[in-house]
Length: 158
Image (cartoon, rainbow, N blue to C red; front, side, top):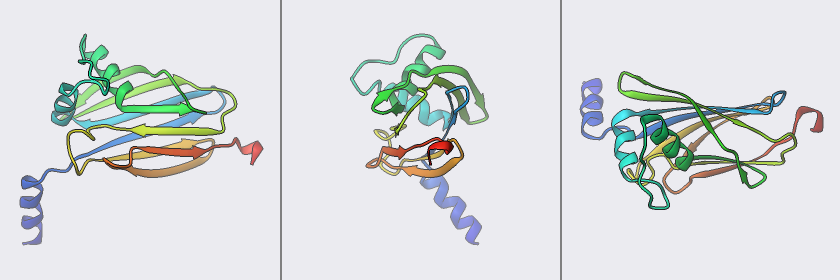
């Protein structure tokens, strides 16, 4: 009975969540990023356009990188890194993206901003798995909490 009630509740009120993984390779200074979102939510959020009011246009890949660069931002000491879309795919009802960016050699602060679907749903949760030189942390972004700042040091500097 509890399972039936939970199923009905989920059908009436869908889950609004995304998953982002960010890993920094300190040897090659490369950020590896993956993002998973529900396809129908992605399309609805892309229709809202960029935060500056511009429309998201172009080929599918151009639209995806415009969207992801607007919604998921990594900064090193206040400077945004420029992400490149490596792959985009659909797996059932979700879209999966793999991105990459070149990082700096010496960084003190890394900020992650995640605004995926925050203009779409009040209950949006964007889950983050962050890894930097042996430090790993999970974090939950919400509509009102879209930025997490990490003070990072390499293992030899600790």
